[in-house]
Amino acid sequence: MPGLRKMITKVALFGGGAKPPPAEFSDDFARADGAVANDWVGATWEIASHKIINTPNLSVDKLTDGGFENWDSATDLTSWDENLVGASTINQESVDIYAGTYAARMDIDASHNPARLIQVLSYESNKRWVEIEVYAKATGAGYVYGQIANMGSFTGLPVTTDYAKLAITAMMGANSGARGLYFMPYSGLASQAVYWDAAVLKWLTSAELFLTRPQYPTADYILELTLSDVSRGSKAGIVFALDDPSNPQNYAVAQVDGGAVSLWEFVSGARSSVLIADGNPKTTDLVSEGDKLKIVKSGTSVKVYYNDVAVSTAKTLNAALENNKYAGAFSTRTGNQFSGWSETVSVDGGDDSFLDAFFP
Image 1 (cartoon, rainbow, N blue to C red):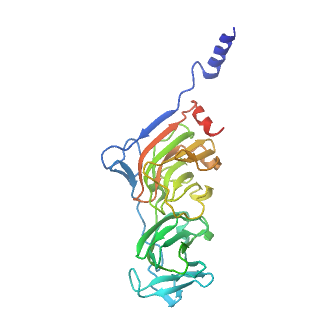
Image 2 (cartoon, one colour):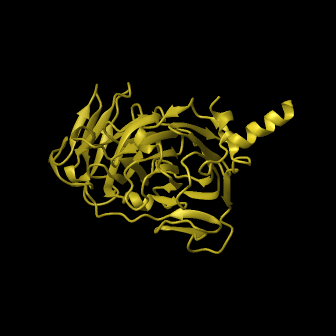
Image 3 (tube, rainbow, N blue to C red):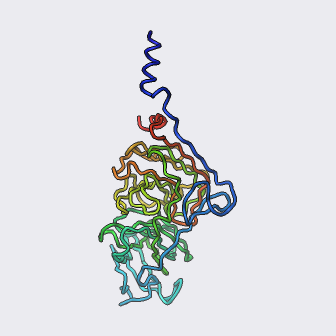
């Protein structure tokens, strides 16, 4: 009988029953301020007003003369290099300062040629997340940015005619070619003066940046994080395919940087590749209350969505990340806030057809 043959085939394939369904979990963090609890693990994370935030510890300042106080001449900083194009210049400023005796002033020419302040960072800084702060202003409105050389571009940070603190999160590279810190103008500053003062650079501890769930039964899942606020210049989002929360070496982060979404992967503690780049520095904000960042992973294939719109086509992860079974929230700065989390995870030997629609 045809019907009997079909039933026998199903029993043989599934051992007498259907495959177990995926495991599901969600959390809206609607509980008392304090420890996150509910099986979440993250030493520097807490709930505040029904949102999770991270306050990672910072090292001592690692810059030499971040106050721009020491000059060999009126155009030559002692501990910083100057890189100039066209008629743009960098000059000692003794009148319009934020702190101390001097600031550094960039006079940008009419063609908006770049002027860059550069400091080569010490070897011990390799393979570290860092927090950079600097006070900046301009004679007009425009955008500036700071970056670690060769480690991608960062969101444009607005400057006005008053000094204000700018904060930037970056990742140190795994080689000497990626250890220079740059400050420079970005847009809207032709024929303007840009002032820099009171810069600091401090290390973050990678293990403190993650708030993780218990180890998953498999590494195939849909993870979604509800955003409340992400500070411009910071990094925040979802960490996944993580090997060890206490000693993170191999993992990926789908992150928002104020104006763009990117996907980075890390192997042996260092950023190994950018699977989705954030493009040029952005001068518009992306994040609104309630926005959703989602990743879908099946084997080494991963897709990233923002408000259910695919950020790019599917990307392929390094094999070192394929079977890592930890995931969770990721944040480099206290100002970042998240208001919800949901996950659908394939169990061992279970049904994973819920992933099929994402990888046709």
